[in-house]
Amino acid sequence: MKKTTLLSAAFLFSMFAASTSSAQMHVGLRAGANLSTIAMENADGAVFKTRVAPNVAVLFNYQISPSFSIQAEPGFSQRGAKLENTTTLNDNTQTYRYELKGKTILNYIEMPVLAQYRPSLGKLEGIVSLGPEVRLLAKPQVLKGGSKVYINGNLVEENTAEEVLSGDDGPRKFDFGLVGGAGVAYPVGNLRIFAEARYHFGLLNLFKQTGSDDVKVYNRAGSVSVGVLVPVGRR
Image 1: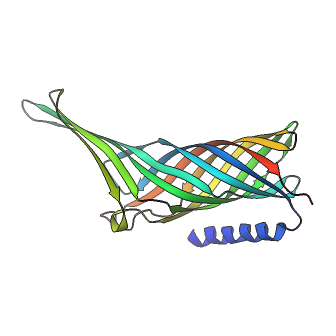
Image 2 (image 1 turned 90 degrees about the vertical axis):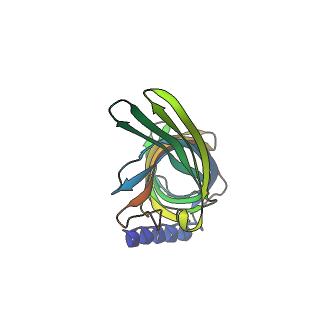
Image 3 (image 1 turned 120 degrees about the vertical axis):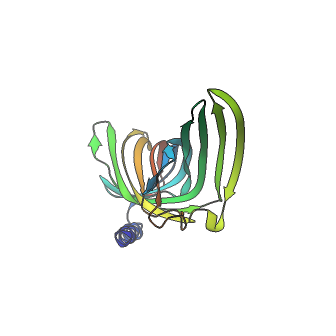
C-alpha cells in the first residue's frame, strides 16, 4: 500500500510538472471544516467520536483539458477526535460511575495533490477529485479532558487536565493517505466559485509505541469546503 501511494504521488507530480508550460493555470483559496476522528485497530475501551476542526489551503490548478486538471493544495488542517468513556461498577450497596471526556488535537501542514475530472453540468461544473495527500505535524499533540466520579448518582469528584505529547510519547510527525471527493463549481465572470465534500483515509500508523504491537491508530476524516479559483495565465 505504501509503494502504491508513493508511486501515485510521483505520477501526479510528473504530470503536474509536464503540463505547466502549456496549461491554463488558476490559483485560489479554499476554507472549510474537517469532521475528523481516529480509527484504532485491535484496541478496546475508549470510543472516539467526530470532532469539528478547521482547514484552509492555497490552490494551484493546472487545466490539462476542458474536463481534466491537476490541483495542488498546500495548507493547514487541524485533525483529532473527541473521546468519551464511561465505566459503571456495582457492589452490594453502591453504584460507582466514572466518566471521561476529552479531545485530542493534531495540527498539520498538509498537501493533497489531486487529479480532477470537471464535467459540464449545464451552467454548473462538476468536480470529482482523487489523489494522495501528505501531512507534517506542525506542533505537538494536545490532549484536553476531564473526569467525573459519581456514587449512587451523586457527583463526588471532578478533575480537568491538559497534556502535550511529543517525542516518543507523541504521534509521528509525518502522515500520508488518500483523499477523494465530489462537488460543484459555478462560474462568475472569470472566477470559479465552488463547494466540495471529501473523505480522507490515513494509511500510516500514527504512533510508534501504543503499548501493544497489534494496536494501530489512523487519521480518518470527512471534510466540507468552499473556495474560489482565478485564472492567472493563458495558453
